[in-house]
Image (cartoon, rainbow, N blue to C red):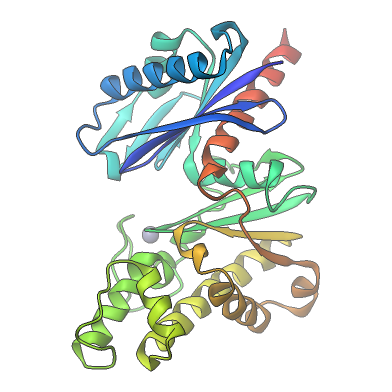
Length: 319
Ligand SMILES: [Zn+2]
């Protein structure tokens, strides 16, 4: 039985897992990136982590058929190069070459939100659905599209980047991508906290309320605070609107919402569904289910393993 080494590189930690060819997580470990985001240092830690998991599980190195890596970045997938990963401070990093040098195994690299989508469509909330749109709502908003089990990347990897749909055409907030008015400036965790902090400054949210995460705002809303409820309603409305625009283009049968903000579960899902029904054409609404992600923090590493397996299959077919 083949196993795959799935890696999900984030701004604060690197999550890794050994994943079977059937999508089971056999072992997982993570390490912090707070101290250093130096790519070679990180590659060495990835190798140590793999060996530790092989020792723990009694699996031999020879059973590891490949490596998949997700990075929060714009990438040139075919060249294996990270063009720009703002949170990591990486520009034009030849990640695939570096990791192949360390591991001597096939390495596949992809945007982290695309891999979360691939993982969810493989063995998560999108399993069994032919056209899956997955939105990862956290610090920013990522997105990915999976058609019949395969990632749909578009011509240069930007397909499904719903966080950067410009939905506020004038006077929008500045986005990390350099534009203004992007969807993620209105309904990411960052946006929810910013909006709540604004309402706190004008007295609509209690001055002693601690607003460090989006969950704090959901908790206040649940307790009946009108200001917090307004913030959540607005954010959910924007997200439902963005999903409606995307679904009207793509006509998916399943939309999966993951990421940190999705831990609010029905407090997010219900108002998003309502907005979706308001802004998408009825025939699209009828065909589309919206569900919360099922794999939690494992979506990225599971999707990374899947990508590696698919790369291997494609290679075997060619030779
Ligand atoms: Zn943007």
